Amino acid sequence: MLSTAATVGGAMWVHRFQQRRAWDRVRRQALRYGLPELDALHHRDFEYAIRDLMRRDGCTDARQIGGAGDNGADVLATDPLGRTWVIQVKHRKDGDRGSAVGTPDLQRVNGTARQLYGADIVLVVTNGRFSTRCAPLAAQLRMHLADRRVLPTWASGGRPLWELLPKIPAPRDGR
Figure 1 (cartoon, rainbow, N blue to C red):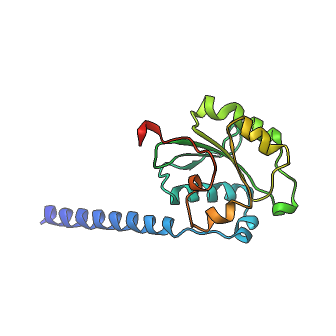
Figure 2 (figure 1 turned 90 degrees about the horizontal axis):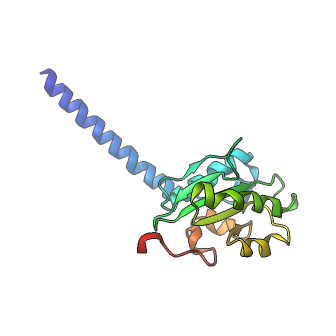
């Protein structure tokens, strides 16, 4: 009798676990943000939103690591094609009316992304704007920038980020 109850209980637990995982996948796939929602977030919540968008797009290991001692990385992820992403997130309370993200931010993440984290793709994402000196520097450093021109297309769920950015490296391991 006890073993039957344990078997039924275990089967119910497995069923609920599978349902929860399926629902989490559906919920992640349905994740959408508009710019007003992203602008209203606290900077830490913006990091979690970027992590969740990466997860939505298939980066099942995406994690937020930002904070003291993050070495210039706020989100780490591996995309479905095996590429390692290191993302520095810069939230601006006033969106594009706030201060521009500058080259020191790019230099900081570039100095650690490949060496410490093994990045294939280094990205700085902001809900604001970049200074005019950022685009040329990012090109020289083989980095990517996503500002409020790219962010709404990505956050609205139309396409994964790697389809929106130019010159993304080829997949690892010939995938």
